[in-house]
Length: 431
Image (cartoon, rainbow, N blue to C red; front, side):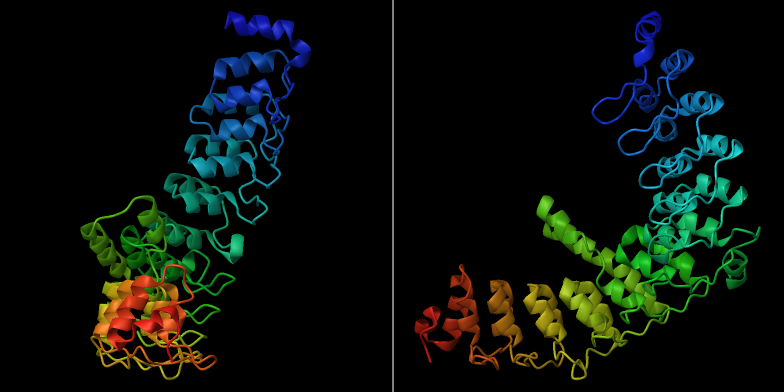
C-alpha cells in the first residue's frame, strides 16, 4: 500500500487517465476487487463516475467483479451514480443480475437503484436474473417491488427467459410471486400478474422453451404444464410445443463436430431428446397438429434425425402419417433423406410409406439423398425398393444425374448404378 500511496501522490492529476479501452486505474482496481487500492484512489481524487469506451463506470465493474463487494460500498459512499447506464443501457443493478451478486444488489437498491430500469433490449434486472438463473436475486428484486409482468426482449416476461434456460426454481419463484402457498395451480399464476398462456411477440408461451433443449429441462416443463397451460397452443408460425420438442437438441451437430461421440453416447443423447416429447404426448399434446407450412411434428423429427422421437410419434399415430395435405408435398421421408439421417429413414420405412413419392419438383427421397451426397441414405432407400429411374419434373433428371452434380459423387453413383446395372450412368451419359 505505501507504493500505491506514493504513486497516487506523484500522479494526482493523472489518476483518471484511461487506457486504450477507456478504463481508468479505478476501473481496473474494481475489476480485480482490490478494495484497499480503490479506497486510496478515491481518497486521492479519482473520478468515481468516469465511463470507459462502452459506457461502463467503475461501479459497473464493482457490481460484476467476483471480489468487488467492498469496492462497490466505497464507490456508493463516495457519490457514484447507482443508476448510471452503459451504452447498451445496463445499470449496475443489471450487472449484479448477470453475475448473481445478491448482497451488492441489496446495497444498490437501498441506495436508490431503480428496480425496473431497462436496457436497450427492454430487459429489466429481473429479466436478466431470470435469464441466468439467480433465484436469490430474483427474490430480492420481487421483494423490492420489481414488475414481473414487464415485457423485455421479443416481448418476453422474466418467466419466458427462466423457462428458455431451464431454471425451474426461478420459474417457481416467478410463478409464486404474491402468494405464499403452492404454485401448482393456475390461481397462483394469476396472482403473479399474468396468464400462464400469455405469449411473447412471436406467439410462444412459456412451455415452448424447455423443449428446445433436453434432459435438464424436463423438470421445468413439468412445472409449467402443472400450472394449466394450453398444451396445443401455437405460435405465429403455427408451431406447438410438440413441434419444438421434435426438433430439440439443436446444438447436437455442433457438439459432434467439435468432439466426435461414440455410438453409445449418441444413442443416449437421442433418448434424452425424446424425454420432453414423450412427456408432452403423455400430457395430451396432439401429434398430428400441422404448422402453417403443413408440417407436423413427424416432419420436424425427421428433418433433425431424431429416431426415438419418430418412434414415439409414429407409435402414437399408429405408424401412419398422411402427407397429402402438405402444400409442399414434402414428406418426412424427403426431409430425412435431404438432411442425411439414415436411421430416421429406417424408422419411417417401417410404416406404410410410398418410397418413390415426389416432392413439389418431382424429386424422390432417393433423388434428394443422391443430390446431397448422403451415400448411407442412398443405400438405405435402395434396400427398401426405391427406384433409381424416377425423374424430376423440370429437367427429367434421375437420381444419378443429381448425384453427378457433386464433386464427390462416386459412392452414391456406384450404389445406384449397381441397382440399375448401367455403369454408363456414372457420368450421366445414359438415357
